[in-house]
Length: 393
Figure 1 (tube, rainbow, N blue to C red):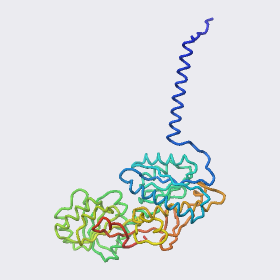
Figure 2 (figure 1 turned 60 degrees about the horizontal axis):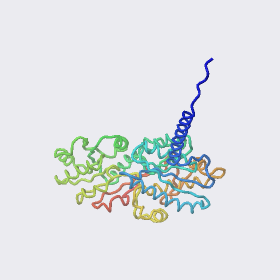
Figure 3 (figure 1 turned 180 degrees about the vertical axis):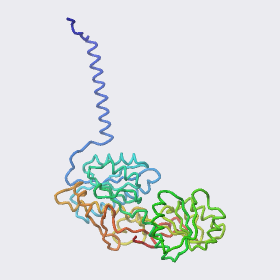
Figure 4 (figure 1 turned 135 degrees about the vertical axis):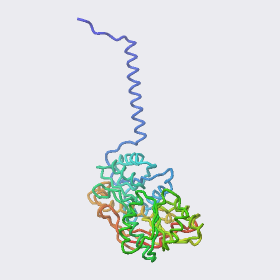
């Protein structure tokens, strides 16, 4: 029988060094992961709660993201006192969602690791909302977006997704109501086709039946408005132009109208809500646009006191209402506290909005919903400050 091979002392020493090195690398990897993700916690701390605000904090949308985060922080301080939650340690933590669904999902993963996270406020756009929903599914963390207005979001208390502002498809009927109110009965329609415009166009056409007449239409997505189009608009004797497109195309249209001395009121939607348009708006040219987002620099009372300078920043009001809903659901807890209390109570939570109106969550949507109409101004500082009208579709 063959004898078993024996390791020399030197070989044993080398193997020991190798094993220690492997263990060290593994330990370093785990330590770095712990630092990067934070220490995993499995049990929530009693009377400790955190609201995760998932918004872009860098890049093109950083200003809007910081507006939301700032409004949530101020709202928390206000409603903790009002709802008698001063015995609780409630914190707000901002997570940067960047500009992609992947970065939003990563932010949601990090937020969900904290068992004290009671709700997510955000994100801003639909693809990020969907990514966050997929990431936290089954964890009973409600998601309330104060900004995403696309009808594509699957709102439901069952999956815990809620929205504060109205959906974009309601801009269509509100736009028609505004045209009728202004007695703009003959309308020339200009379109830049895309999914956003389609959400608005079809409901608008349905709502316009028997109320307004389209005296002409054109697709302005392929070429700049040319002389023939401007002449066609002029010859149509339209009372107004309905423009469903972006701000860059509208600038070209405004230039063409001014060059041909054609002055017709223009009514657009939230896609032209761009303060930079103020510089391109000819004197005397009327421009209106619909938006689900509420901004009012003349508001008084609790909202005005709470928001301060943020009263004229987009998503301020919506962020206040989102925070109010979360904290009121938290305060309604009896047998539960924290995440479970918010998840259970949020579907039946209501708040009292502007003009003492009851606002409640119906199938995931804060209701009643409103679409606001703003008038474009010639100065950026005067842009998007107060709605001309409010429509309840």
